[in-house]
Image (cartoon, rainbow over all chains, first blue to last red; front, side, top):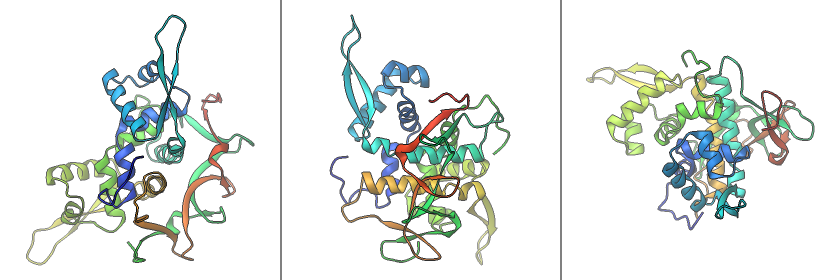
Length: 152
Length: 152
C-alpha cells in the first residue's frame, strides 16, 4: 500500500472499496484463501476471462494484498503463484462477514456451503462486534463517532 | 430477497456480492447508515450521477436491503426517503469490517475518520471472530469446512 495521502477518500470504507470493491477482486481473494494459488486453478474455478484475471491479480499485487512466488513444473516455463500478504490475510474477516450475511439474508435452500470453525476445538465461529476485553457487543449497542467526537 | 434457488452461486460470499458487490451500493448504504435518507442528500454527499443513484436505490430496494417512506415538504410533490430493512441493518458488520481493514492497511496520515464505540459505555468496539459463548477467537484459529466436512 504505497503512500496514502489526505487527498484520498476520508472514509476508510471508501478507501477499502478502492482495493476490494470490485466483485472479481473478492472472489479471486476467496479462491486464494481456500488454497488456489495458480492462475489456471483460479481461472477454472471462477470462469473469468484470462485477461480480466491477469488485470485483477496485477492490481491486487500492486495494492499489497497479494504477493507472487515463482514455481516451475518439469518441462514448463517458470510461472507465478499468488499468495496472501498480511493485509490480504486480514481480509478474512471482511469475507467472513459477507458470507455470514449471505447465509442469513440470501440463503440457499440446501444450507450454507461452508462452515467456519475453530481449528483447535472444532467449535463454530461467527463474526461480531467486540469490546477491548474480547467480549461480544450487540450490534444495536454500536454507534459511530466522527473523529471530532460528534455522533455521525 | 425473493426466492433463492440452488441455481444461484453456491458460495454465500458470491451471493452477498451479487447484492453489495458494487462500490456504489456499499457507499449508498454507508450514507443511509449515517442518517442520509433523501435522494438529494445522498447525491450531494457521494457526487454520483442522479440516474446511477436512482438505479442503485431501486436495485437495493428490490434486493430487500432498503425500504422507502413517502414524505412531503410544504409546496413540493411527495417524495421517497430510503431506510434500512433488517437485512440492510445487518450489513453494519460488513461495513465495519471493511472500515477496520481500511484503517489498518490503507490509513490516512491524519488517522481514522470515524471511531466505533458502545452507546452504553463509550468503550471502543472492534470487529472480530467469536465462539458461541461470545468470546473472541484469533483469526489464526479460524478454519473453513465445506458442508461435506472436508477442510476447504
